[in-house]
Image (tube, rainbow, N blue to C red; front, side, top):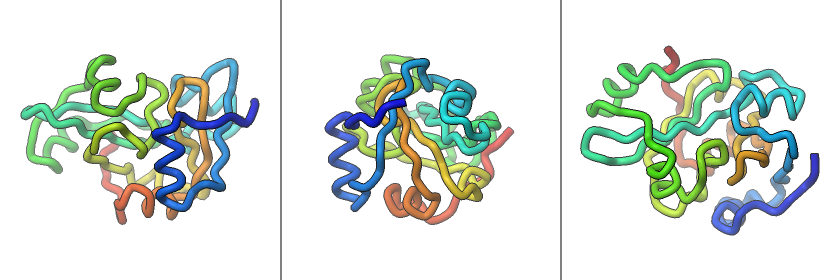
Length: 159
């Protein structure tokens, strides 16, 4: 593990949100999946916030920050937002967020992205989230994540 600088877009978001104290850590073995990240960090998989990008029926991106131990219930999400959804392709993820799959942070995207936070994830003391690449992560408290995303409450979106 090594402390590194985040991509500029994410660094700008850290600075704008008063989060410049957050440290981005790189793991050479990778943190591409929630299981990989939990193993590398040495935490429980439920403390990993996996960033999953979906596309709504009219083509809008939806970012879901999900508890690493659970799967998204796509039908439940569709009921919440009023549109059917599908998983975004790798190219759509990059186009919509500016990041590759496995590295999408919860904020600091190149374009605005509607976001949902899993309620179980927000019950953890510390969350580990992707920091722009499939090898980097940062730790944040649920309160700071809520403030940075502007989302007060999580939703029940687990399958």
